[in-house]
Image 1: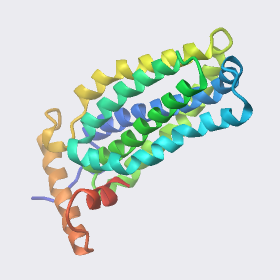
Image 2: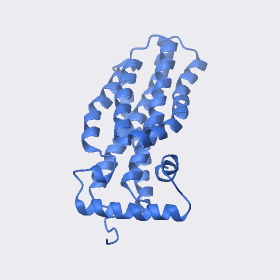
Image 3: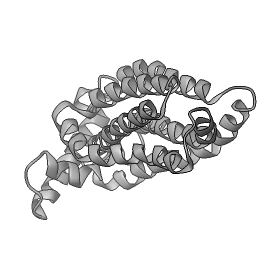
Image 4: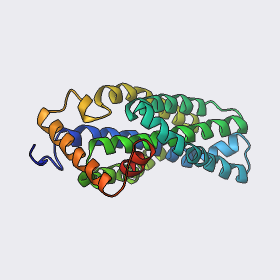
Length: 237
């Protein structure tokens, strides 16, 4: 089979990358919402300055604890399914966040939301690793990372404007609706790997399979063996 000639082009870049960027931006939306909402949350729920800081950090704790098991679950069930479940959980938890009545409820919701984010992030990275060979992966990951500052640039002025005539509860209500609307788009447009994508042209699929075979041979040459955790470590990050 001829050497891959589709690097940097093809349907993958027009479908996989934008879907991953939008999905990752939903996590940025939550953090931006919280940064704007914390002062109002502190006043309404009578939370002191110290607890306000803890509320801001408990999401990171949940994400930290979930990253490792998240990588295992992604290798077992596939990124498409994990992200779809994560989007549903994101939406439900954001809706719950809009209705919290005390500090304990807020802490629980934020922690669980962090767990969901910690599971979903490895899933997005593994998905990129299954669609973009090593020679393309840095560029694909760069698009994924670029979505965070881009989301902040767009969303911060928008959220600040929304808060001029609405409340922090409405912000999280909107945040909860968006992932639930996005789930069908994700499920219909994403496949776990090129072999399962009906929309992918045969030429591009064959070229990718060939290049991934070369990558696997390279891994064996440098002593990367097995699957599961070792593959996530090499291909996902």
